[in-house]
Image 1 (cartoon, rainbow, N blue to C red):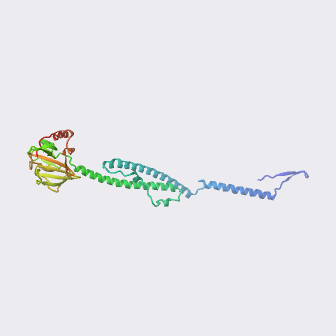
Image 2: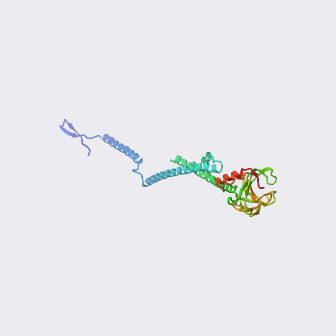
Length: 325
């Protein structure tokens, strides 16, 4: 209830009620309505910028956005883990696997290269979080490319490993006659006295003295290229092509256990000790060839001799004595 105001009338010696002017009433009403409208507008602005007046759909969308942000953060962490794992694999690939198989490492620029040319991410522009989304897309593309490069590299390493395994199996690596079957290691590679002419001449292999009929074994994987007595001085002999430039020769045999064209494995029985050809006593004359040149077989027994046995063989092989062929 509004206050009623009075004034004292000296003429009538009484209080009279003050009647407000109509213009003032209208002014007060206008000010009230204006103030109310302004206050209401400001209140609406404030409410619109808070969650107090959000509709259920807006609240649902807000929760979805928060969930997407959380999922995006989780994806980022997973990408970081993937990048760390890939970096570890790449490091081992370059510094262990490729180093072992003597292959060139993959350059870092090739592993980390992005994608040039057309803007692949144009469709992601124009959104509130475009920069973050584009950055994540680029990281995923680079990770995918790294994985493809690494997969191809591991395929190459697998082939190199298979080839290395074949090489190691093919290189002559054992003694052609077992130690328990040997009478002695008669003569080594080098200048020796010829048993027939007594002249000093080059002996191109190693002579293993053993009784006639003692087994002879292939010293590495390969293919039989000769098993005949058509080569002067060798008598019945066998030649094995091991590939990679290696060939071994087994001479003065009594008989064969293989035929030409046959594939053999290291340790397979290929023939028997004899005394055929230009030979003074039953023994095996053994040669190792590399790239069509004869080399010292003493370096190719690491697969069957202990360090002590090798030391003893080395001592006998270095003695400049008389050969048996």
